[in-house]
Image (cartoon, rainbow, N blue to C red):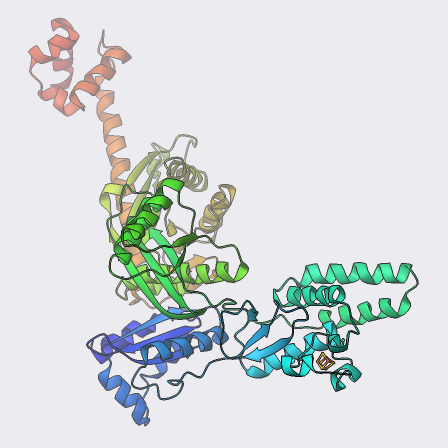
Length: 590
Ligand code: SF4
């Protein structure tokens, strides 16, 4: 990809935290970085810079890719792991196995201790983290010692004490080394410390409050004061940083996203408790398959090319038969795997990240263009690949009709256009007509379980926009974004722009909306004309003696319209109407 193409590509990177990858023409990762905003950070590489390293990276770069993460801090952890995995030539820093610290709780011991460590071992201990900076982990250890009196000494010291150490004097340990606390009491303190680390702050808070009230009611004031102070400390604590992994495990975390007929799977590869790499697959042409079949198909294909780890975490439940089918594929390869579904909060968060990256995989397929620009201007969470535009035609107040046009990836999908004869509104009432068309369209999509639009576009201003949003809300579809375009001034209204957004006349996004509006308008007008013509032609059949509504309907049903009836030979008409009436019809239409 040329430098200018790359520059255009990064312009539509998401403004979200993530990791970016510079790749050479062979697809080799040559540089990895992290960013709070991918778009801003990667765009900076294209500004004039005297930095030789940047110039060298760009001179070898053929493509730039990225991965979303949930925070800048998490980006640091994952960047570190990816650099160690890919060993990119321009990442001089972090190429060694320097890793972020974890907090370790030796829960299998009678009197467990709490420590800082840099490696996850398969030793039954509980691990929390990673932490950055390391000082955060140290502060947490100190807090656990202070509040829950958990020891921090090494086992060699613990086993050989005759009397408590300074930690006890500083009220930072309950001195289990010399039996100043029972194992049961120590375990209770430990379980409270674990609750804190697991993020169950509310549950812990309730438990401590109960203890405080009970101690107070039993006049154990010193103990009640201790629980009160503990609660105060916990209340003052900031939210702990999110845990990435707490076990030394090998697992693939599978994200999945489907958009109409296309699907994507994104997999985080966790090895020894750390996300080391990721893979993605786009899957075209999935019409007629449900999500379970599709996921199964993609995974079977993916793991035919690479070996799975012991566990695979899936984004949604497979039926027992499909789960067995997936496991049997691996059995045939003599590989034993377990299929898991997210239960812990940490796994759910990782899975959500994988899902979000699957969404981006689908979106990356789309070259930068008006729909990406529209996504940006309307602050949409995903690309509006499927836009449905609505217009009405009520010229003269008779035969009001509505039109619905569909644009997929910025192109009209004419086979999906729909016409609506307005049924519930008499006379020109654009708002009521719009409401009817929108409701009928969405209810139909819902009842037939068809793909919902990524964006609904209505012709008009604030009023039309608000009406459309009300309809969506009443159908529990508020997540579908809507926008409108007011004529004359060409101002766009949306939830993000209630007072209107003006784009340059050259804007691709504005041109796309204008194209959708014009197409919906053309389609509505042509349908309206057809209706009026049909009506005026069918009225030519009025007043023929002996031709009642039933026969008139039969004629129109058989021949389609009055023009064809007039051109049909008398004998053919006579077969339906009898000779005498056929002659009257021919005479009337001649
Ligand atoms: S008091 Fe005993 S158990 Fe506590 S830290 Fe000191 S040596 Fe370890």
